[in-house]
Length: 127
Length: 227
Image (tube, rainbow over all chains, first blue to last red; front, side):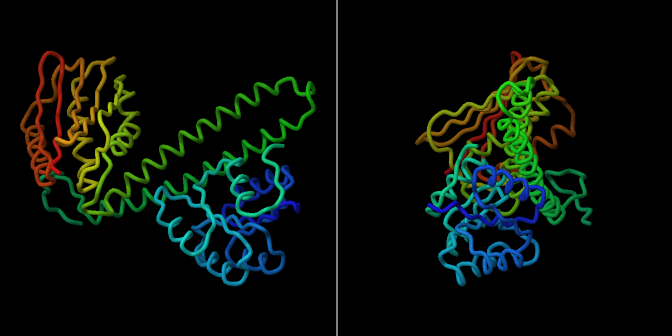
C-alpha cells in the first residue's frame, strides 16, 4: 500500500508546520499550504490522498476551497478542521462533500485514524 | 450609545447592540484561543515524539519531561473546554428564543464561574435528576437569570460552603434549584431589592417562575420552567 499523501491547509504556520513534521515522523507524506490559492495549486500539481482543510482561511474561505477541490479532483478526500464551538460550518462542509471533520485542537491519533478511514493508504498511528 | 435606564441592568449604559458587539469579539477571540492551544499541543507533541525517539537509557530525565508534557496536554484540554464554553456563552445572544439544554447551560455556567467560586473558597456542585432538561427560552436571558441566582446564593457565604445547582426534569416539569450552605444572608438594601424584582420580572417574561428563601444558614432560589 502507498504511504498516505496529505496536504495540510491552515494559515497558522507554526501549527501546521509542526503538525506536518509529526505526521512525517509517522511515515505520512505531509505538505503544507498556508492559504486557499496555495492549496489549489498543490492539489493540481501533486494530488494528495487527503486534504486536511481549515474552514476559516483568510481570503478564499475553506468551504470555497473544498468546493473547488471536489469539482476538479473528486478522488481527493477532504477532512475539515473547524475552530468553532458550533457545528454549523462542519455541517455545510459535509453537505459540500467533505468526508469528515475535526475540531481544533486535534488529537494526532484521531486525525491519523480519520486520514486512514478516508483513503486506503498507509500511515502509522505511533512512532 | 443609549443612556436609557434598563429595568434589569439598572443605571448601566449598555444596550443590545453593545452587548452583541462584545459577544462577537468574545466569540472571535475564543476561536483564536483554539489556534493558540492547537499550536501549543502540536509543539509539545513534537517534543514528546523526539523524546520518545531517544534511545533507551541515554536520556536520564526522560520520564520527567514526559510528565511535564502530559501536564501541558491536560492544561490544553482545560483551555479548550474553557474556550468552548465561553464561545457558547458569547453565542447565546444570537437567538431570541430557542430550545435550550439546561444541563449543558448549568455545566457551562459552573465552569465559567468556577474561578469566582474558588476565590470565595466555595464549591459549585451540579446535580442532575431525571432525563431531559430541555426548555424553550431566550438563551442569553436564561444564562443571565441563572448567573444572577448563583450570585444571590453566593452572597454572604462563608469559606468552605457549597452551592448546589440541582436540575430536576420529570413529566411534571423542569426545575432548577440553587441553594447555598454556610450562608449568613445576603446584602440588603433598596438597590439589591430593586435588582431582585427586576430579575424576577425578567424571568416571568421568559415564562420562568422564581421562588426564593433563606434561613438556618441556607439560601435558595428555585426556577420553575413552563413547557
